[in-house]
Each structure stands twice: as C-alpha cells, then as structure tokens.
Image (cartoon, rainbow, N blue to C red; front, side):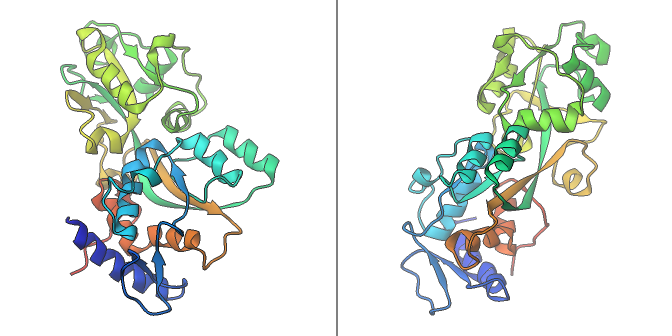
Length: 309
C-alpha cells in the first residue's frame, strides 16, 4: 500500500475510534488541517518509543504514517534498545511507550523494586519458529522433539527422521526476547543444555546466518520470531519447520493451533494522562487503523481487521 493510502487510513479509522469515547481523534503530519478537537502528532510531541528489535519495522511504519514522513526520515525515532533494556528504560522514565515482546523475569524484579505500574495490552500475536537449512529433509518436529534437542537428549537428525548427522543447536543470548520466549513457551521448566560459546548468538539476523551457513552442512537448527523468518526474507535458503505438523502463520496463530505463541504488547506507565500523546498513540495502535497497519506490515494483528472500503 502506498504511503498516502496509509495516511488516509490513519486519519479516518483511527480518528473515528478515538473520538468515540477515548479522547481526541488523531491525525498525522503537522501540516494537516483539523479542528480543535483533533490531536496532531509532531516531532516535538511524539512519544519516546522503544521495544524489541523485531518491532522496529512496525515502529518505523507507525512514525511514518502519523508524522507523514518517509521511513528513512523517522529512523532516528526508532533506535530500539531490545526487549529487556526497553522495559528498563520505561521503568526509569527514559522512554514513554513500548511495542515489545513479553518482559523477562529480571524486568519484573526491577518493576517490583521500583514500585512501577504499567498499562499493557497485546496488539499482535508472535510465534517462536524453528529454522533449519533448506537441504535438511526434516519438515516437522514435535514439541517433545524440540525440547529434547535443546536439553541435549536428541543429538542426531536420524533420531527425528532425518539423515545421520549431528545436530548443532544454536541459542540466543540470555536477555533476548526470543530466549525468554524459548524458555517459557518451549522448554516449560526444562533446563536448556549449556551451549558452547560460539553457538550463542546475540542478534536475530546473525542467528539466521549461522544456521544457514554452519559448516556448509544442513546440521544446524535455531529459533527466531515468525516476523523475522517470514517477512524480512532472512530465511531465504532456510526452512521454517512445522511443529506437531502445524505450520506457523496468521491462521494458526489466531486459532491457537500453533503451540509456541506469545503476544507483542503496547506498554506505557499506568499513570500516563489520558489526553497525553503517549496515551493517544497507545490507543491508536489498538484501534482498527493501528491493527490494520500491524497486519499489513507482516505481523499478525490480534484482530483480523478488514481494509475499509
């Protein structure tokens, strides 16, 4: 969709929703004409946003629509500090609003120690997916097989229907949002094996590359969020595995059929004034217009919002 069409959507659906009981309607671009009841986002009043690395493209789209600037021009507003650090920044007052994956336990401990309260609502559904080299004959793993690979009980692809080749299982770093998802959604209390240092990857893109090119073989496996694997072409040359024979995607996410699901949240301080730019943006992301933008950007919106005529 062209940027002008995005702007029409933002000015229409979002404004109607916000006017109907949630405060002033929102418009994008400081040069747009509106009545005194219209909220206009500008660079001066735009909230300081942060969040997970995987939500940066969405943040750029939001800023582009609401500020009526190109994505390149709003890149300076979306220098995200990753999941755990972004929650800390919100708690300590360094940021105003997050679009992020679930916080790690360390964040909840900081939140409790600071007596901080937040408002948090899911705006999209994310899934943790597993990728292997495209030449790997394995197409699907069961939940139990994935768990046993990452506890170290299963060590060869022949044990899960593949060729006789050792499994090299890559992991993310401890504070990564996908590592939090892995421990919560997949391992479910099971201890992950201690990986060798070179098998712990600090960036999602680097993990994808590591799995794709490891030792010029098809022996590696790794995990990432669905958005990265499916929508940023980072999995070219890789295969996204089915889990219990269920493929990840919008249909299986919204139905709950895919087993490894976790929301993305929009988060702000609980005491944020209702008429502030932060609260207006928070509500807009949850509005029909925001949900439509989420979906069109390649994420799986919580609600299946049809394009307005």
